[in-house]
Structure formats: structure tokens, C-alpha cells
Image: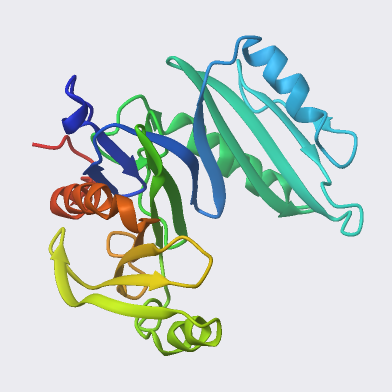
Length: 279
């Protein structure tokens, strides 16, 4: 989903993609079937060097496990206070980089977790045209009722213009997040500042009706800030219609740059097909 023109550069996370132009990915995380999974560009020291460094961060001596050929994997107890909660970490070479997977399991239930991690690794495809986007590729499995995504972007030429894209499956619609400004108004007022509502209303993106709020905040002796939010409550237990939060922030002087990025993201937001190429 990436073209040669920066203004047509697609970004994706989980079940959605959008055009963001020239941005840097500051932070990315995804989980499916309660399993964390992401991609990483191949480090200079290769998979062996990366794996050695990663094992060095574990809380207990790792116990290697053979998932399948070419995959580095091991169990460890990350927290000494909970020695029976184990973490399986796995690293698999993929095109142009590495696929990183980790999942927790109770001691004695390692086999179930190993099977799931193996299935996720085998379901990786080096394309983001369908499936659950995890960076430079996707997991082409049946949707899970436990999916989460967090993607933070900053404009390449203005790093203080930042947008966070976050999704999570919900048991029931989330009708409270970014829906009421009373608490924020009180907090700003207590500091001698002002909060102005620039926009507050419904907005449709990717055929989903969410609530959009733009605010401008000024507090004495601090930079004046603006924040844009779009919140979709989500549908109960639906991985294709999760709760979605898009949050943009910057200084008042860069409001125009945030607005341009914001309109690009919401105007292009689209669902990624579950199992067939985007037309």
C-alpha cells in the first residue's frame, strides 16, 4: 500500500490503512489472539545478533524451544514475582527483516501457546493487501475477538505534529472515550487557562460514524496546543469494527500542518480486506 509519491504513502495497522504522506513511525504495536506481533527491519548484526541481545533482556535464564526450522524461540519468566507466568518469544526471518512474536502462558500450558505462535508465524504474508497488518506484512488468519493496535506517527518535517492511531476489539461499544470535555475544562481552568472547542460533531470515516472533537488549549507560561480526536465506539466482539481512537496533537502555530495530515488520514481511512487483495 505504498506508492513512490510521499503524498500517497499508505500506513496500516491491524484491520485498517490510510494515507499519511511523509511521516516517521515513532511507535508501533499489535496483538492478535492475545499475542504480540510486529515486524522489524533486519538489524546490522542479523537475526543471531538480535536474538542474543533480546535474550539478554529476559528476567530469567531462557529455555530454548524448537518451534520450526529457521525460527529462534525460547521460554522465560520475565517477572521473578510471578515465576509461573511464562513468556514465549520467537523471531522468524521474513523478507527484508524479522517477524517478532511473543505470548504469555501459565506454566504447564506451553504446548497451546507454542501451537498458536507457530500458526501466527506460518500465517505471515509479506504484503499488507489483506489480513491483519503488523508492519511490513500481515497475518492472514481468521479474525480474533482479541485484537489491539497502537501506531504513533510524526510528520517527517515537523516532528511535533503527531497522530496516534489506536484500535481494540470491545465487548460492548465504548461510548465514553473522548466524548465529554467537562473534566478537561475544569483542569485547564484550575491552571488559569482556557479551552476552546473548535469542532464537535459526528463524522463518517471508512463508513463508520464516529465523534470528532477539535480543541485549542492555552495555559499561562506554556505553549498553546491543539488536539483533534475522532472516536468510533466499536461494535460488540467485532474485529472488523473495533473501537477506534485517532488523536492528533501539535502547537497552535502548526495547526495547519496537523489539519492537513488529519484530513488525509480520515479522508482515506479504509478497511483492509480479510482475505483478498484491495481493489
